[in-house]
Each structure stands twice: as C-alpha cells, then as structure tokens.
Amino acid sequence: MATTSAPPRRTALLNHISTTNIKGDLFGGVTAAVIALPMALAFGVASGAGAASGLWGAVLVGLFAALFGGTPSLISEPTGPMTVVMTAVIASFTARDTENGLAIAFTVVMLAGVFQIAFGLLKLGRYITQMPYTVISGFMSGIGIILIILQLGPFLGHAIPKGGVIGTLNALPQLIQTARLPEVVLALITLAILWFTPAALKKIAPPQLIALVAGTLLSLTLLQGDIASGGEGVRRIGAIASGFPQLRMPYMELGLASKMLIDAAVLGMLGCIDALLTAVIADSVTRTEHNSNKELIGQGLGNLASGLFGGLPGAGATMGTVVNIQAGGRSALSGISRALILMVVILAFTGVAAQIPQAVLAGIALKVGVDIVDWGFLKRAHRISMKGALIMYLVIALTVLVDLIAAVGIGVFIANILTIDKMNALQSKSVKSISTGDGELDISDDEKALLDQGKGQVLLFQLNGAMLFGVAKAIAREHNAITSCQTVIFDLGEVSHLGVTAALALENAVEEAVEKGRSVYVVGACDVTRRRLEKLKMFELLPADHTEISRREALERAVSALN
Image (cartoon, rainbow, N blue to C red):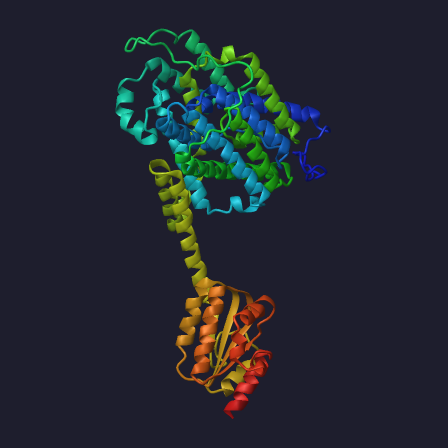
C-alpha cells in the first residue's frame, strides 16, 4: 500500500481536502456510501427515530466531520454504540413526554455535539481514550450485547418490546411463540449472506448491500404472502419523507435538564472514544497522523448539525473508514463525496427504500452487535489477568443490565484503584534505609565504607523515582523502624517527582527525627523537588549547611561527629 506523509496544516479551519487524488477519493466515497446506506437504514429503524433519521445522520455527521475534522480519511456516520445509547435516550424521553420526547432526544444530540466541540477546544483529545482497555472492552462488548438483544424482537417479526433489554428478555418466550416465519426466514437469510459471502464477491459489492437487495426481492416475491397466525404481511420500513429535513430547534424542559446533560455527556464522550480509536486505525493504515482536538471539533459540529435536522448521532466508523482507504480515499474529499452521494439517494430513491423489510435491517443490526463484542479479548482475558477479566465482566454486566454511566464509572474506579495499589507496591520498593555498607542502596564503595564507620549510628534514607501519594506509607514505615541512631540522612538525589502527600510524609519524618534530638541532613534535592520542600518551609527546620551539601559530605560530617 502506498504511503502518504502527514497532511499539511495550511488551513486551520478545514480538514485536509486535496485535489491530487480525485479519482481515489471519489471511488472511496462511492464505496463508503454503498456500505453506509444499509447501515444507516438499520440504525435508524433500530433507534426508534425512523429510517430517515439514520440516513440524514449519515449525511450530516459525515459531511461536517469530513469538512472540519482532523483525520483526512475518516468516515463518520451513525455507529452501533452511538445507536444503542440513542435508543435508550429516545425511549426514556418519549416515555416521560409523548408529545415532545423526540424533540428532547434530538436536543440531547445537539448538546452532545457541543460537549465534543468543548473537549476539542480545551485540547482534551489525547486524554479521551486513556482508559483501561478492560473497561473499554467490557463497555463495547456490553453495547454489542444490548444491540443483539434489542434486535431479537424485529428478528422474530415483532416490534422492539417496551422496557429495553430487560423488557425484551422478559418478553422473549412470548416473542418466540408468536414468531412470524417469513420474517424469521428473511432475517436468517440476511445473517447467512453477511457471514458467508465469498471474499471474491465482497470485492464487487459489500455483503450488507447484497443482503438488503436479496432480502427485499425475496420479500416481494416468495415471502410476500400473509402469515396464517396473524394475518399480517412482512413488515417494511414504509414511506420515508423525501426532500430536505426540517430544522428542529432545541427543546429543553427544566425538570429534565440534568438528565439531558448527563445523557449528552455520555453520548459525546462515547462518540469521542469511537472517533479517536477509529482515527488511530486510519493512521496505522495510511501512515499519517491525525489531529485529535480538531477531530473532536469536527465530530461535534457534525452531531450538532445532525441533531438540528433530526438525524442520529454518529462517530468515526471503522468499517467505512477502512473500506474508504482500501478503495483509494486519502483526503477529506472522500468523506464529502460520500455524504453528497447519500444525499442524492435520499432525495431521489426513498420510494424504493420504503419496500425494505424490517427483518432484513434487524439481521444487519444484529450482525453489527456481534462484531462489536470483543470476542478476541473475551477468550483470553482470564489468561492475561484474572483481576482485569473480572473488571471486564463486571462492566459488561453493568452496561447490559444497569446503566452505561455506572458501568464506565465503576469500571474505571476499580481499575484505577488496582493500578494505584500496584504502583504503590512498586514505588514502596524504592524507599530504602540502611545503616551499614552491606545494604542495597546505590552508593559508591567509599560511601559504604563511611556508613560502616558509623557503626549503626548513621542511617541513610534513600528515595528513588517518582514519589507519589502511595509512597507516604512506605516513608512512614521505614522511619518508624528506626530504633536508635544519632544521624539521619535523607537522600533525594534520584527523586524525579515528589508528590504533595509524599512531601508531607517526608516533612513529618524530618520533624520527628529533629524532635528526638537526631542530627538530620536532607541532601540531593534540586529543581522542582527543592522548590516544593521550600514552599513547605521544611528547610527552616534544619541548619543551612544540612541541606546544601552532597551525600558524601553529609556522611563524612556524621561520622566525624561520632568520633
């Protein structure tokens, strides 16, 4: 594959739009549009907002993210994770307010875009994806499982039951008993096409499009008859409004403001993670480097525009991005052309799309859910780390059965606690104290000889590396182990960072040693470490010549004082 250099940053506002690769960009855009069409329809129907919302979400998010983002070859559109969250948002607000629930849900999409723009302007791009992989894997796998469960109703020929995941699981026996055979057959054929399409055929047309066309033709010929049990035909998308979408002004209810903001933050954060992870994949394939903060601004503008016109929220889509690159797309022109092609399809061919069976879309969405689940890590997580595996399983369970926010929050909290505990254990080993030359400290042979001359009355207390808050206990433990000595030398020469808690623990150790009448030296402190100790006024406890000399000089003075 040909490599390209990082895109020039001539324009601060627009993404990298090049005319040097028009043929490749246009072909990439066409290919990505072909894949986006069935996915957008499936996600629109699955969310409860309707097929048109999925289509316009694919157009608007894709167009604005391509124009103003920071990853030239990235394709943005409604994705499985974003659709799962949006489905919950729509269900929640329409249940509370039947008349304005959908307007509130689209306002949440706009707010999510505002959050993403704010993240980009605050330059938080590099921090967004810095979460433990066990949490990301568990969260994404949980979202995949939710998407699978929510498609069971349409897969069996019914609407999605009320109550989300729990409602679907409770209604599953009834759904199976009253399953509509033609729609089940259509859904199974769809899955078979998606799974078993030969690689040679995939190069000609994406499996999703093949499934969409084949399923629709079957439903209009062999499987179009009434169902004996219910007397109803195959359920289809139905009429899709042609023409441009109407502007939807933001709608806010004060009583729901806090929930709207929380849902928007979750949606925005998920979109950031989804987009930036996909941008990293695009970088690895094209050997370029994306601009994370600019990408977040582009994604935010896309979701803001999508919400204003009743479209689904979106993010960087891995499948669309990789296909675009493989087809030759290299600049943002590919994403722009893809959005314009989809717009033409919406404006001219909605009558054809109305005949698509909902069971086919359910099969497509269910396959997306299966692909989202991190099967590779699930199979081997317990071999890598049992604690990490338990965190992942917990996040999956919380995501599916409780709440997305709780899942991420609890997962990150537990993972960070375990990480801090591990770091503390490692850092504690870098806090050592010896009073003889036979110890493990990193000092010269001459200094070891001086320690031996101290006959156990001179204690060298050495700290190494980054001293964070977890080291405070180790400092206190080592100091408390001191029984009898006349001189204590605190060596900070190898300290790269001294945290506030560790600095206070060191101060306490120095104060206690001084109170017990011991001669105390603090040596090696420089730069940031010294300035922090000066701000604590710790050096005021000691004579100046006890803090401005070297470790060797301190050892010599201590031994001389004994003699």
